Image 1: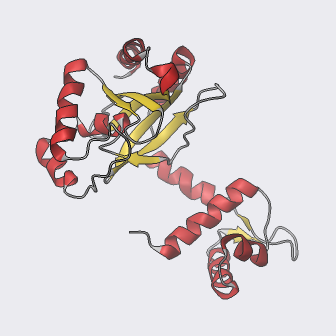
Image 2: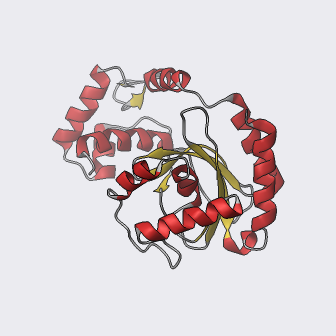
Image 3: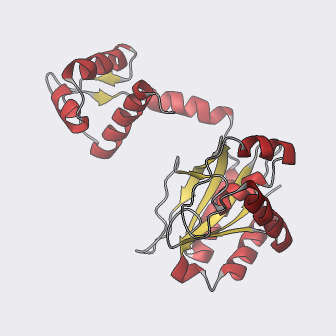
Length: 242
């Protein structure tokens, strides 16, 4: 369920991140198709809380650095270790594919850090990108770190949809794939969620934090390199992870 007022605030932040310039009330309202009155109320509230300001008279609104300050405070409270940056950069260079660290967000996996491939045809992923926890190698590498009891509780919240021909559409299918993942030593997905995309992932537990490390790219480039990439991924974890 999406709370519309909260979504509107995030839409405004993403709007400015994309446009990178001030915008008037009319421009914002027209862009989203929002009523002028509710747009005014939202922008006024953000301005009064110190999150928007007017750089020049009548030039429109723009975010203040308060967003950054608050985000830095939050990130510093539970940062990813410095070695995770090294492992992402190393894997991206060694494989030529997009590499990411994922964490759990309910029934979804969310990317916490990403290094995109430099190839023109690649997996386009950004920090905050979400994918179904059961229908991705990233998510299944997280599920391997759950107890069976916790997994069963989570499965009850999942809507098992057929995203692609390889999507597991039942609890039994997910559990069977997890067993295969344990046997082979890594999780893999073949267009389970995203068409023509393959992913290889391993758990990356940090104390009580459940994370996963994934290499993902187009199937035409990945399908003959699954085992070598999996070996590269595991060796990188062995070198860097404590």
